[in-house]
Amino acid sequence: MRVCLLASGSRGNCALIEADDCRLLIDAGLSGKETERRLATLGLSGHDLDAILVTHEHHDHVGGIGPLARRFDLAVHIDPLTHSVLPNLGKIDQLQYFTAGETFRFRDLEISPFSTTHDAINPVGFTIASSEGKIGFATDLGVPTRLVAEQLKACRVVVLEANHDDQMLQDGPYPWSLKERIRSRHGHLSNRDSLRLLEEITWPGLEALFLAHLSEENNCPELAEESFQQTLKQCGHDVSVFVGRQHAVSGCFTTKPAHVI
Image: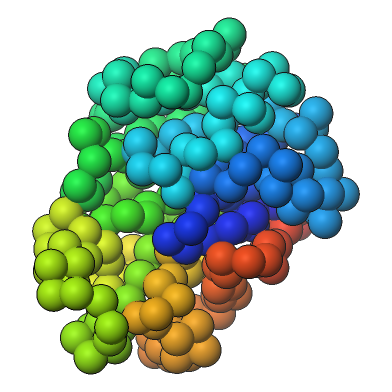
């Protein structure tokens, strides 16, 4: 298993998930060329990918999907309503629809999309179950609902939004209307709310936590990382914490299969 964030932030989001000899991207918000460049830093190319999973239609999550899918003949798994509001996506030969709440298989993986609260037409997060354990992915959350918490339990790796620090957002340069949108039930998850969610889902089998979609204006990566590490230590768990960045690939979490001793 390997998990890393190729990019994470308001200008482009893309995560790499590897398990059971399958390589997926969750979202592709960078240009096709930039995605390829960042894959190359991991010793990969677009030819090594198998599919793209789409969370929602905002440009920072979908901007590179069409070029990548066509260039490398990738399957694209997407909600039909999300697809309906992407008229410029172009022709995708391997377009596959999913329904939130219904698990589907892709090769040896079991992928479960679940509904999230965000200002998109039908946004989702994912869990990906393999022989190597379960990965949870939840970003662009207005609120950490009970459904999200239940889905993220028992994951070996979790990618979780930690968008903003409440005080930094309050005092920051954004116009009031944007501040209200960010902290609304359909906006983005604050460090505080993300920490509360983490306390609900952490368990002895959690090995890695990725902090995603950090605001460059309204958050501090070092502050966020320290806060989450402290919470995990207070819960008695030794978990690797990785912080997603906008302009560089994050650290990678790589494991041996769960059944290997």
